[in-house]
Length: 87
Picture 1: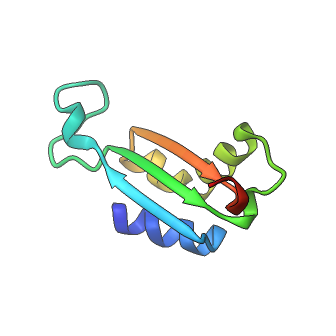
Picture 2: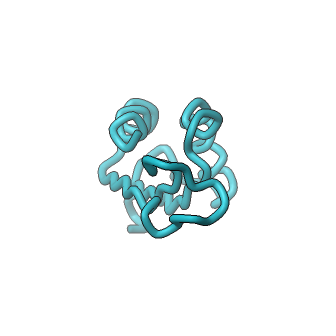
């Protein structure tokens, strides 16, 4: 799942920096967790695509790019999306 997320975000945003972290192990036994993990992720992304966008707009763009993954297995997605001059 981390590889799928990475591929989709690279294709959608051509980021200068991208980090996809599977944090599922930290949520064992909590809501949305499933056997095998791959349910809770953190994304740190820096892209020109976020320039001039609000935090909410950035999150909506990332969520739209990952709609299939969010519908399929990903329960939680923490997003830090910035423009290059911000991070």
